[in-house]
Length: 589
Image (cartoon, rainbow, N blue to C red):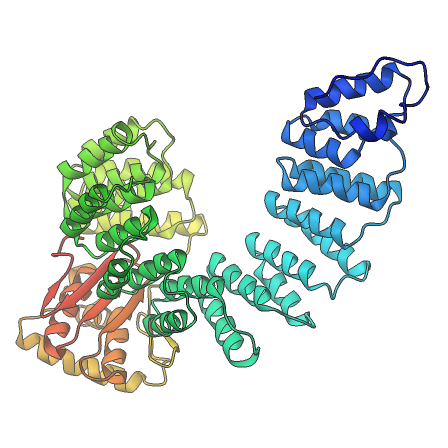
């Protein structure tokens, strides 16, 4: 900072001083020096440029000092307030921007569109939906309801805060929309777990809006396709992306890898990955490793990791989640332990809850449930429901009732309304013949208001329509044909040695009813529907919200062999790729 001029007795800053030096401060320390000089010379503090005061103090994390100056200054017109609000909203003090806005309203100064935009940015940073809704009202009241920029910001805030119902209402009322508007709605739906609605908006954008989707649109709709396993639409978006010049966009390519892997098409994912040679980032490598892991191709995932290191790309936390998943899905205990140690020792990555969850899953699946329990007890971070749930799953596989009861004690506190955990414990008791305990668990569920989640399976046809089935579903328009097709498959399967595994039906009913119950599982209905409605040789792709049961797993292997089809099922844990009578999981799941 330039040296200050000699003191004077003038009550105001010297004319030579004001224009020349009042803007010559770039740190809180220099500002304080200038402020002291003004006080010492009896100059008015109002000559300080308040926007720069706010900006400097925002960067220097001393906003209270800026507030002190602001409160003792006068002539605060809208532009001054806006400059200060902008500095705070775009800096590290969004909550102070909100406070300053309320001071502005109290002072009687009328906000303008810029004011609203800065405050909306602050609300987005804070995910402050309450003040965001108040600001939405202010925008409408001040007559800015047709300001497209503000409307898009409000849509974005609603989406980020999970308020998609409000976002949809606003969207429907908007007199004007641009591609940013549509992108905001599509990405908001994806983030809020509404992939079907996201795809509906995309199709409407394509068919009715007259606007061209851009690369942001492509990334968002590909994420929706991944969630729904909508491979055909994903391929169409891929083709559009290439025609639009996005083929070399790294973000688009990374999203394509993720989409193809989650839709069960590792061949297409690999093709995109291979075409990225020289442009791959850690996200490209990690997406491919995670995809291979989810499909049970552990050795390929580990080999790709070696190639990643040879390429000079340093792994991140997501990479190690993929590696640990690969080890867990194939029982590679020693390799998993080595990766867990390496991530901290060799790469300085602190394990997160997801890494600990993978380790508990790895040990539990491999039958090392006691070691898994000890691992949980020694964790430096508090275990959550996912950790104890992984242990409970291992206890079910290896019939360890004592540890299962300990796990459920923790889960009843951490995730008391998750029906899955109670069902697993009930099944463990049932398999051990402890029917009184089964009754006790079910009574406990009823007392706590826990409702059993219905299993469902979804299949998407070429026309983009998603068909959903639940166990025992007779409501589908093609129900009669579906059941007839299933009966035909049963005859063929029995000739190959299939016998329904009724031990999985833990209900006190007749054997014939148990068989019927097993026959009506949702994935069996979805596969029968797929065989009826897709050309011969077409891969059938299904999403299931629960774990595939042992009987369905055996049946789908036989159906794949009988039909000559590849059947890809994505359950809540992983992929099962059935082909020629075998499954990619190697019957380890």
